[in-house]
Length: 223
Image (cartoon, rainbow, N blue to C red):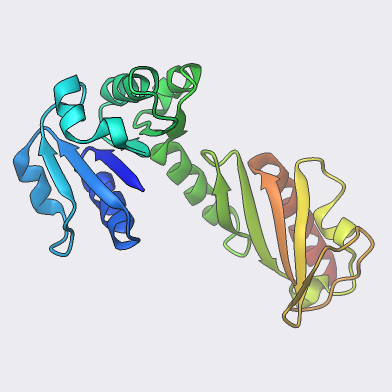
């Protein structure tokens, strides 16, 4: 894919390097030439100095033949304007923009752009780990509204059913249960064994309910 990354800060550098290593043709755009010094020595993609909001600059970056653009600066109005221009002027369908300040996120969504809010997602992830590190997120959709969690069944919950542990909550959906290396789609009445690995898709609210239920079951078992 031909991909343009706008913004050569920490996030832009990491993204550009990862994309390049996976074989994509990457062009990085930034206002300052010195920003490109942050790119790793084995990055051999293109670099363009200039304001990506300037159509001449973004054309030099190859916007007219690009498959996707990622706008990763730390200035939300600029990200929004460039993302909107890429979509409406150059008809780029795959546009991903960074939202730096969560307060302005609704504005991004109003423009129908694919938004990644690293601040919101990071705060939610830390909160989850503080609540219960045993339930860890392994996949995040959107900005963390829905995640897939992995949970290894402890001895205290062996003999309980899937429904007893995860509950009938509509905000939680069991994705799979792996036992002895073999994955299956369990029914609510499936009886759990120690070391079973459960993957469940849930909202933050749904997983909070699961945590409370699991902690209660552990307390009852240890009483």
